[in-house]
Amino acid sequence: MNTVEQYKQEKHPLDVVEDVREYAEEGLTFDEIEERAGDGEWERLKWAGMYSHGRQRGYFMMRTKVPGGYLTPEQAEVIGEVAEEYAAAPEEHGGEEQNEIWGDAYLDITTRQDVQKHWIEVEDVPEIWAKYDEVGLTTIQGCGDSARNVLGCPAAGLDDHECFDAQPVIDAVSEYFTENREYANLPRKFKMTITGCRQDCAQSQINDVGLTPAKKEIDGEQYYGFHVKVGGGLSDGPRMASHLDAFVLPEHAVEFCRAVAQTFKELGDRSNRGVCRMRYLVQQMGTEAFEAAIRDRCEVDLPSRGTDLTEGYAGDHVGVHDQKEDGLKYVGFNVIAGRMGGDEFAEAARAAREYGTDEASIRLATDQNFLITHVPEENVGDLLNEPFARKYEPDPGPFSRGAVGCTGSEFCNYGIIETKNRVYRWAKALDRTIDTPDDLDVVRMHMSGCSASCAQPQIADIGFRGETVNVDDPETTTNEEGDDIVEGMDFGLGGSLGADNEFIDWVENAVPARAVIPAIEQLFEAYVDEREDGERFYEWTRRVGNDRLREIMQRADADVSGGTAHETGGRGEVTNDD
Image (cartoon, rainbow, N blue to C red; front, side, top):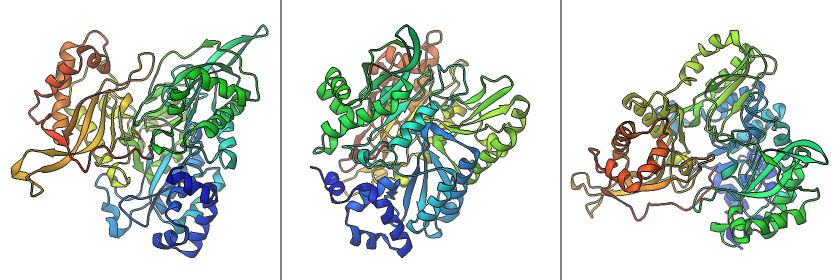
């Protein structure tokens, strides 16, 4: 049994919720918490949705779950106001100047449709929870070895690309697992996605469980329901999910997901933390044996597969779009790297109320963007003139539109390089300097600060994972050995989801950060010259091959291949990717 399992044996991790209330009431410091509860408390606190900051002892990151990404305007406003009031950097850590782009009080939209806030102090947590309780929000099991936030299509119920609205199923599954002690101690995190959307924007191929739309004739009648994929995931050992020969009716989705969790709970590895994820269990058992184990534990009938209704992978909902109802629009706003001010998020919520109908909502997307829904066509212009809307424009350049970044070294225990500011600046710079083809609306550029996959670099056109890099530059040496140690990254190309899904190829390793932009410029110069009609960037990179891509990158006026991974940096251990 690994150390984390021992911590969970000592005390059920959901019990930490009441502990937090005691710590807050007594005003305990981190040292006093550790003295009272031991090192294992930092692990158990994840079940309360809290991670201790990596570099600022005494503060937490807090994660708010948003099933399917769906928020009412009231919920979104509370999230923004909590960020303003409780998630502001203290003066000793820079105050309003803590982050040179976003200041002090901001929030992060994640690739799992969660919201993360920083600089949270334990004494404020009960007050935050009380505000959340009033509007039906929770942080419980936002982290930890249990069912995480359930993903869905952010345009559920809105768009004619869906077969049916799966949001009620998402809500039912989320409600079942949240605070359910029976399934709150799994071998590792358990990630589910459920959608009725034909375009699989909820990323079923890279989740532990993916339910996607299907139909089947049963006893002479046609039924809509779900096909199932299992065992997908990223980080080290990435794996595309496998299809099961099963058809799940919407009313059976909770029981099916319970049966999968039960299978994982009983058969998953609790000794080697590095291979505890469910995808390793599926790989080891084989898909057919894993399916048989689920069927043994499932209390409803699971017919064989029917007709699959997934048509491809959309990826985002940025822009102004028609809703099913005549005269209504939804607007997708581009949030580079997912970070925005708490005040701005609250303003977006107020704008949804002002310009939308009574059914207006805020929806969070897996690409770290957000939507405002149910906007009458005549109100769209006024909405787009709001200050937040001009900043998070719904018609961005292709690099801004596809830019995703994890938390990075700014707050994460395992982050090797800074990510958020870098992704923001790079996306803006690349949109200014690179003349992309008119029909290329998005270039997915994802940056993870370490070898974990919080930013999902393996499915991007261009993906990065952080390294510390040695370069041979005696004029700027930083140690006695004559090394210049700089931030850098492994540089990958050619990832995508959908019908032509492939994980990225890591084309160059340990590239100094200062060489990345020149290398991208060279790649796009060649791409524009050589692309076939309608060819996407990732398609071109696969066609020309890695040797050619390296040769193109090395034309840059920068030392693209001159770095080596620093022996004490390199790929940090796999951590709590969102």
